[in-house]
Image 1 (cartoon, rainbow over the protein chains, first blue to last red):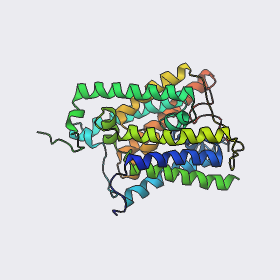
Image 2 (image 1 turned 30 degrees about the vertical axis):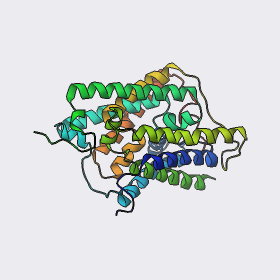
Image 3 (image 1 turned 120 degrees about the horizontal axis):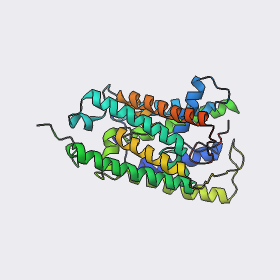
Length: 170
Length: 153
């Protein structure tokens, strides 16, 4: 359904995210973090008695909201994802290993730092927490350096054109 | 109080997931392009999200606003410690390679991209590994930062 454009512009989605952050503080006095929701979902799966139930609902909600935006916007289709990696000639197996190992490092780091892009990156910075600003600066800086090394070594970035289209493999 | 909070949690999750997917933050290509400065949308999005919420929260805090279920609005501010920097560096490395982070990985599956399931599985394992390490070493997890502070019910 073409009710939404393929991509809502940043000047709409950015403030919308900000309003959601403030809204959850006004209702529950809580930050809107995603990795905490993973932790609580894991606790719920283990039937821990101290599980924070609403964070499990929050976890499920992210998934549902994502489906809704996809159906109203660019349309739902089963696919692999990671088009730029495919275009760079990476095999599905290599892609799976890279994504899997990277996600483990990311989860470990998020738990160690006490938050992720949403918890520290948006909610923590909005609370003016020095720890959150330091964590955010560290992960953004590290990610930029790692991406630079990755594109230099593998040519991954060169295959993505500036207009977003993918250069066809020779 | 428990039930309304569950529904509110679900609704806020849905709103968050909706925005992430509508902004295509759930695409590897978007994150990869952002981190190599081929586009600026994600930085602008994050900047505006903070730009809207930071001043609003500041004003609400100063006015001593009472929240609906959580008592008086209390923002959490913590000192910078080593685990923030080391954890942040590990997180950034994974973020760059996987081109996704915890919430967008879920919204990636929502859009039909099946490799999102690999990312979500890996995230669970990584979070669990850190929890297990902390339990075994009997290290106290510092609280009061990001969203992993003492969570109310």
